[in-house]
Each structure stands twice: as C-alpha cells, then as structure tokens.
Amino acid sequence: MTTHYDLVAIGSGRAGRHAAMQAAALGKRAAVVERGPLGGRSTNLGALPSQTLRTAIMELTGQARGVYGNTYRRRMDVTVDDLLWRTPPVIERARDALQDELRRASVDMITGRASFVDAHTLVLDGGRRRVTAEQFVIAVGTTPIRPAAVDFDDRTVLDEDGVLGLARVPSTLIVVGGSVAGLELASMAAALGVRVTLIDARSRVFDFLDSDIAEALQFHLRGIGMVFRLGDVVEAVERRGDGCVVAQLSSGARLVTDLLLYAAGRRGATGGLDLVAAGIEVDERGRIAVDGDYRTSRRHIFAAGDVAVLGGLTAPPAEQGRVGATAAFGVPRPRRSTPVPLTLSTIPEISRIGRREQDLREHGVPYVAGIARYRELARADIAGDYAGLAKLLVHARTRRLLGAHLFGTSAAELVHLAHAAMAADFPIDQIDAASFDVPSYADGYRIAALDAMGRLDAFDAFDRAARAA
Image (cartoon, rainbow, N blue to C red; front, side, top):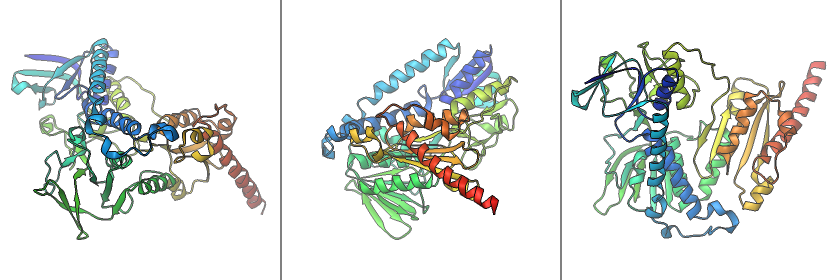
C-alpha cells in the first residue's frame, strides 16, 4: 500500500508536527510519521516530565512555599512514587491534546519506523507500507550518547532519558557532564538532599551563561552541598556486586556512588532512517547540516529541531518546522529579528535572552549593566526567597536592551518581558517608566533599569568630557 502526500514530517515533536500543521494550513496534504509515543522526546522523556519532576521536588521539599513550607523535611521521607506519580497523567493529557491538535489541523498520523528507499519514498512496517511525498521534514530529535566504557544497566547507571525509570531516591549521585539536562537534574537532586558530584572535562560548565549568572548558580549549588570536579574525565564506569557504582577518573580518583547519571552529550536519532538512500549526509554525531530555511543538501528535504545543525542562534523547534514548511512551498515568511530566550529548569531556574556581558566586552560594544537582586524585592522578602537576581545589559549610546539574564523564581516567565522589550526596540527609559505591580518579581526590571540608567548618566558625562578633550 502506497500513500502520497505533499509533505511528510518524520517525528512528532514540536518541529515535526508544526511543520505538518503549517503545510496543512497552506492547503497541502500532510502527515506525521512517528515510531514512538506521540509528542516525541520533549513530551515523553524531556521537558514535560522534567518540569513535572521539578515541581514535585519544589513542593515536597517545601521550597515552593518559602518561609511557611516544611523547609527542613528529610530527604528520606520522599519516595520515587511521591516524585513521579503525577508524571504519567500529565504526559497522557499532553498526548491527547496533541492528537486533537493534529486532527483539527487535518494532519494524518502514521505510526511506525520509517526509512528512505529513495529521495521521495519511505518504507514502513517491514516494507508492507510505503509513503511518498514531494517534501520531507526530518525532525527525529536526538538520543543520549552511551560510550562503551560506561556499564549502563538503566537502574544504577543510566542516561538522561532513563530518569523516569528510577527505582528509588539515591543517597549519592554522580552526574557526568555539565550539559543543560545534566545541570537541571543535578540541581533537582541536590535540592532533594542527595549528595551530588558533577564531573565535567571543562574548567567551566556554565560557559553558555552570562558570567554573573554562572557564578550565582555555582555558588548556590555549592551552598546546598553539590561538589564540582571540573577538568576531570570519567574514563570508565563499572557496577559492583553490592549495587554501588564506581567511576574511574583520569586524575586517578575512584568515586563510589549509589547512582550514576551519564549526561555528556547527545547525537541525532538518525540511525535506521537510511539517509544515504535519500542522498543526505550526517556529521559524526548523526546530525544534519541545514541552511537558513532548514533545507538540507537535497532541496526537497528539510531538517528541524535538535537533529538540525545551523550556525549561530536558531529559532525554537516549532518555528523551525514552520519555516521549513513555508520554504518547501515557496511561501515568504518574515525573518526573526529578535534573539531566542533560553531557559534552564534548574533549582532555582535560569533564563537568558540576547548578548552576554563577556560577548559585549569581546566585541568592544559600549554597554552598561543594571542589576536587581531578589533581596531588594518585597515579593522575595514575603516568600523568603533571596537567591536570585535580574541583570539587564544596555547599549551605552542607543540605550536599547542588548540582553537580559535572570536567576531565581519565575525566571522562565520573566524573560518574556525582556523579549517583548527587545522586539519593540524599547529604550531602557521606557522600561523604567512602565508600571510594575508591587510586590512582584517583575518589579526587578524597574530596579535593574534604574541601576542601568544611573550608569548611563555617568557614561554620558564621561563621554562628553572625552570628546571635549
């Protein structure tokens, strides 16, 4: 049996399904092919269950209730069932919503493992079914890297996709790799009272963050007991007969732990697609190079989401899928002019948008920084929540916002205010003039803007004096 479509998206994550829905909105016949549960990794193993786990930890340890919560609740009172009981229904409701979304968009859902037999044909179900299309969007996401030297058993030695299979809350945990997922899960475990050791070959594990935010996060995590072993490499991991795990480090150290989480990188989940038959090459990590329209080396095949490699900051996966679908059918689409927010679901959470202070210094951009600390906010004082700050980077001459960096409660929500200000090209003066409710965490923008404006006045005075001289 062969079915023909105008566009087929391989993968039902955000990139794939939004590509198919965009094609359907253009009047094209579209389908999504999925080999696993609907929604891809983000819905079933990644962001959604991770956020649910984070919320459970915040509530069960009293951190979500500040000074009125049971802050000193003992970790051993919390079980895996306590942490994960809400996760299955949350995932199930999300799948139901996605199924309804695809149905209303008139997108066909095809279940099965697909592979290319030529540049326009997929085969499924061992060859019993074929799907042909004029255009394809490959959005299969990524899978964890699992080195041969690491003795995985998915119980005591597991990768970041195996967290939902935990049998018990460990007393000690080693996290190998300072990736985003590694940092998130390490901070959650530390907040729960687990003794966490983070190992990474780099001398700094937060190099994608603004330096002040990275320092604040590392200071906070060390304060709750996390140990950092930076510049060290895990050479081998073995399981002992008593159920413990031993990590052999390049420094010669041997660390014993209850549980080891390997989170040192991911690779494109392109195995089994037989991309060679479609004329598509992948890099050493199984990812696909694309251009600004997310088009691969074959003009009718696009790649979007984590499996795609595009230099520089890129758009969110859903937008990538939509851009690919519109480009596939020659429909003009406005180009993104503002940067993309990045959020880390650590405890406390982190968000950033735009340039980092170290980037501005490196490129000689004249700027000032305005900072508001949570201890200055009435809302934080009410909640007993002092570990946080908001940092705004402002161009010293245009007074426009170049970047915003947030660490603390509600950072993932607050970053969108900075996103809107940057999209509207507001000067920092307009942020100061805005009305922020008090008490609120958003009032930190006003305090940071005032701080930046004071530094701008000093910069202007110095600039005028220099020119006069």
